[in-house]
Length: 190
Image (cartoon, rainbow, N blue to C red; front, top):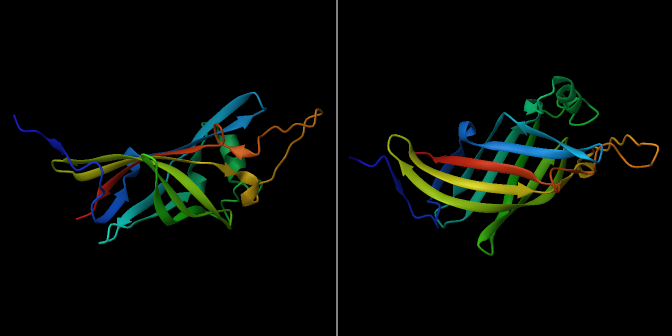
């Protein structure tokens, strides 16, 4: 019996271009709703790549189609893509471009510029590199998990709907504990 996959050095991402496989990747988020629950969603259309230079220095780029948001509620999704929130007609994509990658204990931190709704801010993603595997007829596949904290007000999304108590319907930060989660598989290009 022939093995269909084999492990590759899990501590090193090889030189070259690694393209995000959207079929086996996800970008998801959660946001507080009415201060007592969470609404979860995802972006269904995105692309990106990790490029490892000959000297081993990695760089990351990514693009998200903002109108691909899916919270399992068409009415809410239409509102989120409207000018009240993402203004997807005027700003159809969100982008990330790394400015550096550094070790952070047994994980990594990716510093970069994130642009949403025409506003660019520096952000840091916490990254876990899950290793590389070579799959017959598929090539080398790398796995990553990343998370980032974003405050929506930093990107010009400042719709507050106050209650009589003075609290807000939507919290100021996006995500469970203000976290957006990325589960990424990337394929090495020949």
